Image (tube, rainbow, N blue to C red; front, side):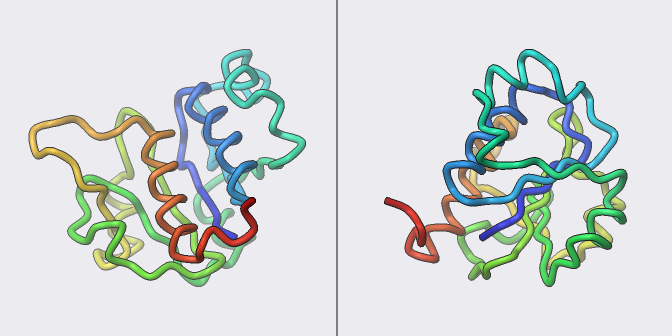
Length: 154
């Protein structure tokens, strides 16, 4: 229903958790290189619990290669730099939620390329650091899926 794109993810356990999330929500996970780990990393496998068979992961050499292959109608970047909250948007099937690396977030040039109206933020206390990547992805996917009445769930 939705595409989750991780731009240059760094921590294998986060990606493993997101693989499991995608399997349980019917989302498609895309990893945009370079990755900060090997796909056969033990921490990735442990966190993903072999959910690869239920949610195949697509890898892309670059953001441009991802866009060329998927041809999404809308890409939303999730960033602490966004002005609009994630719950203020009506999501459509096929939307892409793009997340940056854990230590840096989405680079400025990526945010600029998406346009300010497509950069969304997750509400949080003003003096805190951002959420863990897998928590942020979970929040985003469940908000979008909720808007579609959790179609396909049990």
